[in-house]
Image (cartoon, rainbow over all chains, first blue to last red; front, side):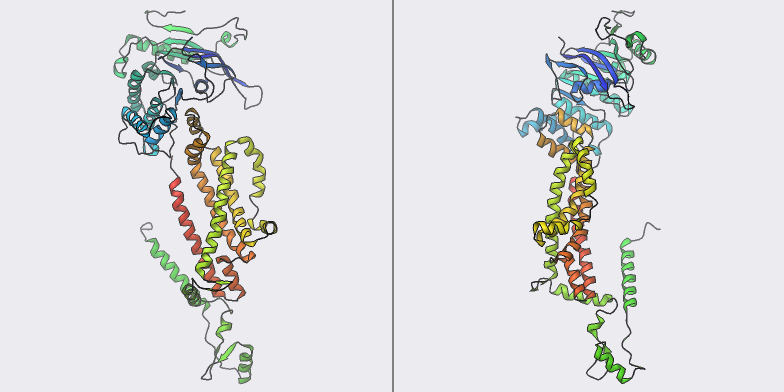
Length: 290
Length: 293
């Protein structure tokens, strides 16, 4: 069994305009190995953030569940830390206190000195030395998300959940933070599940990219293996022969195929016509289809 | 140019204009006996309108002048000097110095306001966290909120049978509803990410309350407290008047009963000054707990 498994998950939302509940996504199964970096891409409203929130335990699935390390993960917990798109830093706390709150919760029996040392280590890791006593209001978007990343990495969770973490950061800073994230991840090797709609970001960071069709009733349609060796850097990755193949494939999917195919929408409940996501890998020069 | 003026200069100028205007409008010509017969003068003296001085001239009776028309700024200033001079003197059970009266009013106000704030914030947090309960209780809050705190007074007086506590409870009722309603609103509109972080970090209920919910809702709660503060300050004066409890509000009524209009104006000014001092103290405290996003 995979380290993190999203098992036959379906989510319905109550409809606002009356009528029956709306199916956000249907029968989604994702298997993530330990230390893997997996990204889900889809259009806005396909339910990818809902999926992430369910893994985090912040929302409930209508059907199906999350299995982490062989156990069902129900409700939020320190083993699945989220990096929020909106940063979610407490504006009344300093940078230090924001991270320390998390560290103290994760390691309740640590002494004050241990907590302080640990927080300082992660503040230095994201290059925020000197900003410890600042409040989030005094920080730029990029710096805020560095605090968010430091807080998430500092509690050393089993799974890191990144919810469009760089969407609110300007393009130039975004690239820098993405590389900082790579470096932190290289040393920690957490299992990461990220959702985004930035194709370049997904290719730079991920081992695999799951392509989601549009909602309602969204599904994981394809499983694209990023066949570009690590370590990766923004400047060199674009020279890899697979980069634009993968990029074009994903963009083509998002433009053309994200809409439902008729048969895909009518997968019967008894599983007689179970559709596995298409595995796409550019290891051979031609598309390998499974 | 308009933005470069010194506001305090304008303030002083406006005050001077006001005082001079007040003085001129309340100025009364000295008594002029011309055209009045001796008989008419004697009648006036008999009525107490005028008095005969030692050197045989007639003047307005200064005692009766006090209640004729509105006293000028000089009379009020004289009264203020007199009152402040004996600020710490207790002349009798009902005649305590102004410093004592301020103390009584401030402590009455503080007791009611603080008690109401604690109750309102606690209830408000409960309602803010529980949307179903909030919706269930909200209609009652909406009915109770607009009731003037003074309307409760007879019922409170009948129930607690003690004017001292009734006055405190009137202040309590005045400061309860605004804080309750805004706290509930502030907590329920707390950004959900903060609570999600708290949930992921597995903070205990108390820790969640004191490190996330209360600080997060603090700016809204302080706004509610500010409204309550004003409404309590407004309620404390008539409560003292109606209950006959010693305080600056009661002072105004006592001076009216004494037909001492200068005293009434002085009492009004004291209420204003006490309000300003309490308000600035409140703002200092509020500055500590608010934050900017």
